Image 1 (spheres, rainbow, N blue to C red):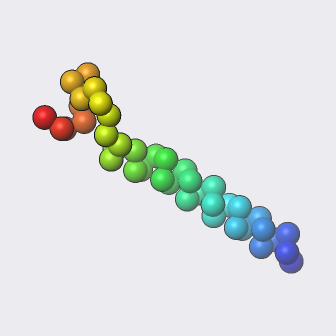
Image 2: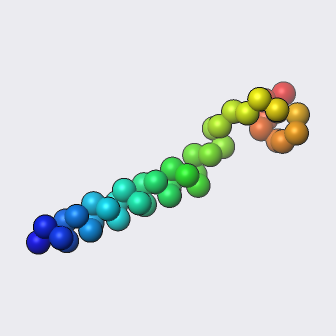
Image 3: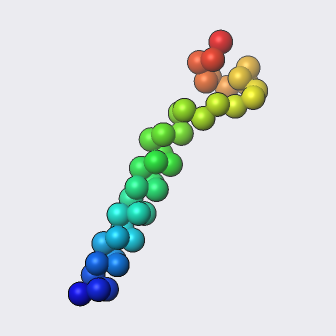
Length: 41
């Protein structure tokens, strides 16, 4: 029972981390805006 709960919690944390990593990386601002298309100019 406890092992199943820990497995689901770990799966949820991993999915949240992957979702954050792949879908929220556009908001990162970088100093060299001229070399990439970050829409800051």
